[in-house]
Image (cartoon, rainbow, N blue to C red; front, side, top):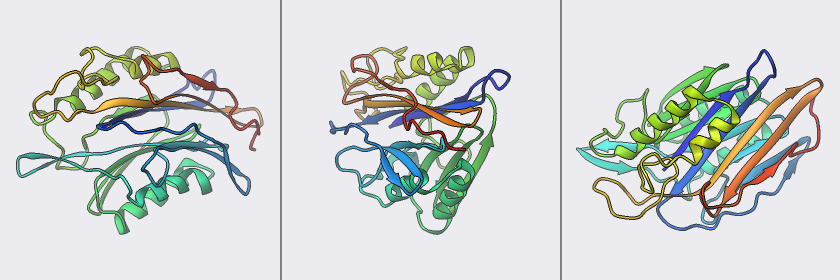
Length: 269
């Protein structure tokens, strides 16, 4: 359903983190132009779409960002896709950027939520300028890894929790992850991330990262890319600067990218 990930900036030159998401759905949805909201001293930018109770991605002026992905499961030899539309998990997504000032606090909040309240499968990445937390959760089982360097990408299958859809049932999630990792291995800069989001190595099909539906394929649901976002959280001398680039209601190849520099225009010490 989505391809997500992050890449840290070269720490010898600059401290920061780039976080990205490709949003794929099987039906056409209206994605809304993001607007800055305020909660006390926190300014946040939620990305919303029609039919969802909360954001599918977002960032705040402390540099906290999140991107999430649904998980495909193998159940009784048949593919099961976990859909979260209308789920209150989106309310928790909003809390990540609405009330938290660093990624570690937000990640532990989500870990508790997955253990105690939300039993459906989920994949999420929470970042700030210094850290990246990648979480897989299902039925009370939660696996979380913390990274401070390099890059990390994910598609729609678990790698740490058992029960992921096997390759034979869903090529796309495995092919997209392999392509993202291959590109970032060669170039994990912001340009490399844009290359990932626009990649159509497997043509205009659901197998590519930039997904297009042009024919029905066995074992593949007709997902197509409808929005993409890239956040950059960068440490400065006396604060954090957040940049954002996005395309909505289209894919990175055919849509119009909007670039927002210093989104919140306020440095937070």
